[in-house]
Length: 157
Image (cartoon, rainbow, N blue to C red):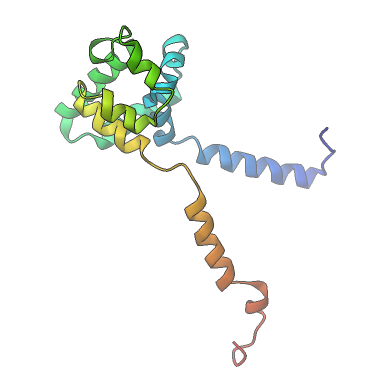
């Protein structure tokens, strides 16, 4: 059941949705999705879109130290994506563990054969996705700048 919204309310709601969509579509989010071993299978079976790949490549470029390390990380990404080399699909335990352990720990444990990509993946995947810290900051801000406090005159403040 979706109630009818006034035009102004609908426009405001769409602005909020659009802002949230933009906030969650960053190169860091794209790289985190691509490097999360839990989603490895879906990356192999679908055509990976340009937004995901450009986000991943942007992060690889930003977090690589020099062109040589960047080239190695890109080659290691290809091995990871195709399930070759240290990411061989024949290692069933490694891929089974992807569902039961945090992704940055998975890279620490199983990414030793791809040190450049491992370092980048661990940095990206260890970032907290929670907005709790931001909520605490806004909570403090609201305490300082409340309506009641803003109405106080200078001598009463």
